Length: 132
Image 1 (cartoon, rainbow, N blue to C red):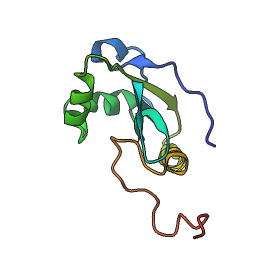
Image 2 (image 1 turned 180 degrees about the horizontal axis):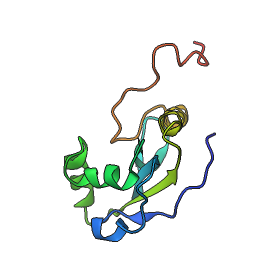
Image 3 (image 1 turned 90 degrees about the vertical axis):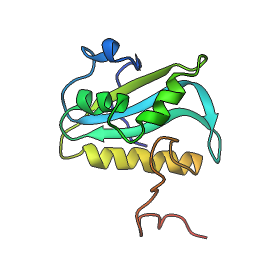
Image 4 (image 1 turned 120 degrees about the vertical axis):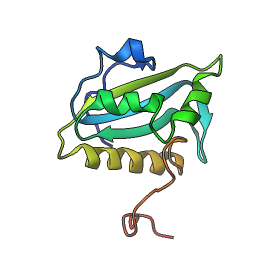
């Protein structure tokens, strides 16, 4: 399991996190306050992502320009659900690897990816630890 120092959860509100999220490389998770079902089990994780240069800019993109902006907006408009973000600083060189590890660990546990991640799963040949 990938371990490193996650930040505290920060409410997903542009005015709230501008001074709390660094302009550095790293990984992040978008979470909601309530668990939702995956193929196996339930989770709060909506999306696992990364930035090789600027976490703040990458996370801010989720308000307008990101491919998940519309779906995330609908989730945020649900009265009972609060969305938050947490992050961990990484080097430019290992941000992609850490994100990949987090996605694989998530898929191994839930047999699915977070709802706002594309359903890309393992790359060809990367799932050899599964024997049918």
